[in-house]
Image (cartoon, rainbow, N blue to C red):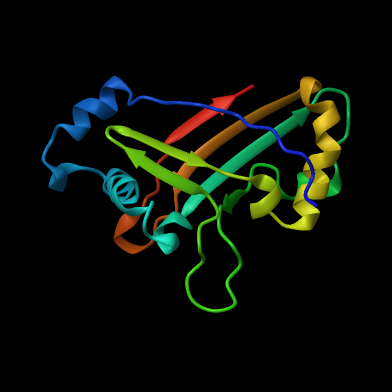
Length: 155
């Protein structure tokens, strides 16, 4: 069975600058904002679009070395999606939209590989002494580029 997990519940709001930009006609928006709007509107029902959610995590240990797997991917963008046998990658995040709220949750034990879960399980006892920063974006391609940061947190 996957290791016992932890939940982090976060909520964000648009910055004043982003809210001002969002009031402009959509043709004036940067590509990442158009992509974010499409993701918000359709990700709950579109597994391939949901699979474009990308997390970028950076862990720093104070006076301790990190497991090799963590070092290998530390600060590297990772799609929150299954590896497909064929076709588009299906998103592993659950997305629920209700009114003006959007919730996405990620079960690391279910959605990540065994190797990733092992490395994360090794870090759990050290969590109080680690610095963690996570950022989220939606994978862009073609006219969706450049990507833009959607939200972030640090603990």
